[in-house]
Length: 113
Length: 122
Image (cartoon, rainbow over all chains, first blue to last red; front, side, top):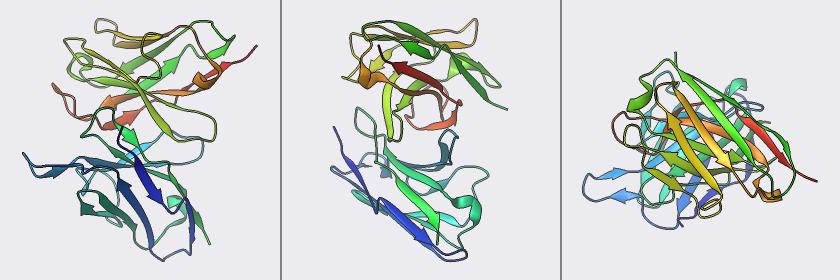
């Protein structure tokens, strides 16, 4: 199975500052036939189900604020949250969906400093 | 709006069985693959099983293969997960999730239910 490793496990960022979460896959999730990275990001707030933020590594889901962005390709990806808001407190998960079975990262807990 | 509502969770003894249901609304049910993802208490997300939209092709994680059965009733807009031979390590919140793309399996999920808690204990 593809192992998705996120770093850090947790981080605390001040309101208005930038948060950066990394996701590394044990194999490339870039599919050469369509040149797409099969990577998604989810946000899970306490007591809630996950919410899709980003898919194809860089496409924001409808309604997701522009302060959320993702970069990277192949095996290394970064989720960036600019100008952190209080409502961004959550656990963030990356997920690869190129290889079977699909797998998730272990999650990164984001808190306010 | 898309709605997914799980039910059927509860306390079951090791070796027991349970059936989860997920009632869906707000989209053309038969056009989308559906998936069960579980989350053990305080842990991360684990894919469990997926069923395609119309053909009903099924997929299972190795950890549940042979014990769990996913099914769907497109006439009732309902997804099921039949769980047999339950183990302590199956204890989790089970979410049903809707595939993001109709008519094919994109394998990422744009809508999730609130989850059903399964506790396995004697």
